Length: 198
Image (tube, rainbow, N blue to C red):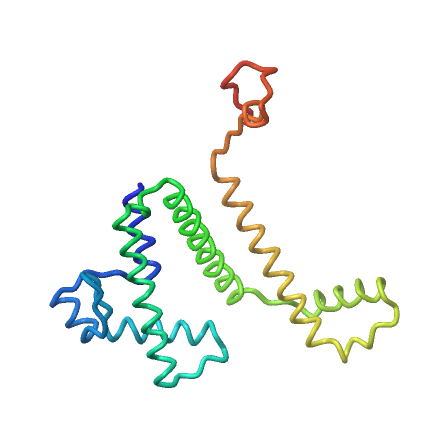
């Protein structure tokens, strides 16, 4: 497990790949080499594109590209030093990688399901009107329905998608066998050790 998580973290951080002629053909020429680590042109372009998506103000100048490349070299040098010192096999590191991996996996699953729900979900005029009536009860001075219809429709759609996603999660939970030993978990010993509550 530790080796799998360590390998995953290295791949996730910098897509660490050993240099090989087969990789070079697929990924283009090597743009930087740090010991046994090679960064190929296609990988560099993908990572740069990700950076641009994350930083809205990022300007794609030659200087910015060189700075990005220098930062990647520095990170790779530090990663290699950490690996040389075997920091990547410490339990604390492995657990943090596992938490990252689990969080990323759950995020991707929820995004996929939310897209699926969004593609198949519609709100009716009645649902939008019900939302308006509810808001009108809370605030009698809100503007007329016609002026808020688009905003209300969007809100009703988001609320419905959220409900459907929560319902899907509950259905998954209901299909699983879950047992919790509350006494053991909470440090109470009133019952026999090992007794589980369904």
